[in-house]
Structure formats: structure tokens, C-alpha cells
Length: 317
Image 1: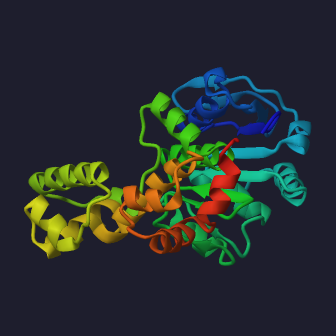
Image 2 (image 1 turned 180 degrees about the vertical axis):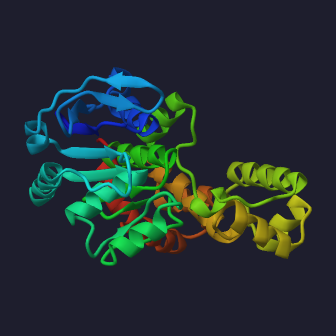
Image 3 (image 1 turned 135 degrees about the horizontal axis):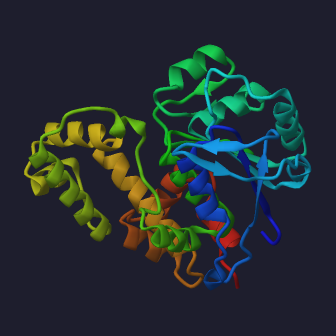
């Protein structure tokens, strides 16, 4: 990652929150992490003053040449989903994609990548308010409206606003491993990884008592992953019926309780794999998978790689 250049785009009527998240993740120096952190720059997509949400003005150089050498380009929203991006910007995006640069969007920024054609034939997400519009305007894109972010490898898209943080932390984990990602998340005082999709954030009433019981159950499950858990045992601990537990998990996280627990266990496995001397059998036991075979199955299903390949990538010997 040495000298890996991240370039954030700036434009008139800039989305301040999405831009700020990008700056927070990549512009701050983090010598305490002991890794080669990113180089960071901002590139205006057009000449002239850049007004940002909240009545502030941002000064950024109009230097398209930055995009010719950027390793990662981030589009922190777009000023209007109905407004076509400037043609020169689309040309720069296409050229960057052709040479293998990583392209990322937050919220309405997906419309810039879509207009450039780099999402054709791929999966993508955006804020749930824009999902239908994106699917109608760009039918060659497989829109996944419930996802917080979608990683296609070279092109990564995030849902609305705060989901950008999920995606940006995902990039850090992908580049530097789960341990570094967790430390950065701690600095931000946010969860290192949120499971579930946008469904959990759609307007939906929930009884306060049920919400509290479910939250306490989740905390307890995270603290006791090695124990055997069933829907019935989880429901009993939460003082709910199994049917109510299923419904509340689905409404709150977008996942059923069993799938949510599996993903929490896989997150634990990732952290333990970064310890070079912990055998896989012990990791399977501590994470609650029971056997190496079960661990391998779920790890590959959710990460598209093997435990061995993950450990080889992130463990420094």
C-alpha cells in the first residue's frame, strides 16, 4: 500500500458529510498503526468555486492529472441524481477504470459511475430512495437496494450517507486486514462492521421493549459465540417467541437470527486468523463453528476466499 493514492472528487454543491467521511478515513496520518497509510488528494471536477452543503465553500485544485495516477477514486455523492455529470469527468472515470484503478461511490455518487458505464453488467447499490431510479435509468446494472455496500472488486458502491463509512472501513480492512480496520473504527467510535442491509433503516415501527430485548440478546451472543445457539434458545433468552424473534431480527438487521450469528462468527474468525499461531481447529471452536469443515464452508460463502488465503494475505511473519 506504499504511496497508494486516494483521490476524492469535489464538485459544486458538494455533499459535505460523504466528503468529510472520506477525508477522515484517508487524509489523516496514522503512524500509530505501523502500516503504509494512504496518500490523499482532492480533485475538483470543474473550475470555479465549490459550494458545499451547510453554507461552506471548499477550495480544491482542478487537476485532472491526479485522476491519471490515482489508485483509488472516491465519488462522495453527486449534487443531483437527475443532473448528468460533466463529459470530461466521465472520460476520466473510464480511463481510470481501463487502467485498473479502484472506483468507489457513496450514495448518489453511483450515478457518476453509472453514467460512465463502468457498472454495466455489475451489481451496485445506492440510497434506498434512489434505488428504483437507478434501476430504471440503467437497466444493465443489477441494483441491490438492500445492501449497505457492494464490492465488485474494482468498483465498490455504498448506500446512503453513513453507509459510506461502512464501505470506507471495508476498504481499510481489505487493504490492511481486520485488525487495522478495527483500530480505525475504534478511532471513529463506530462499529467495525455492520451486518444486514438498508432494510433495517427503512421507516418501520418497533415496540421499544422488543427493541431493547433484541439489542441485549445481540450483545450477549457476541460475547458468547462459542456456545451452541438455536432459534429456540435465542428466543428464550430474549423472552420472545421464535416467530417474534425471527420477525424482529429481519426487521432490525435484514437477516434472520441464524444468518446474523454466522456472520458475527465469521468476523471473529477473521480477527483470529490474523494471529499466526492459532490453529484453525481452535479458531473454529472459539468462534462457535465446531468444526473446521463448517468454518471453511461459511467463510468461503461470505468472503469468497479461504481461511488459508486470508491468513496468508494479512499475517506478517
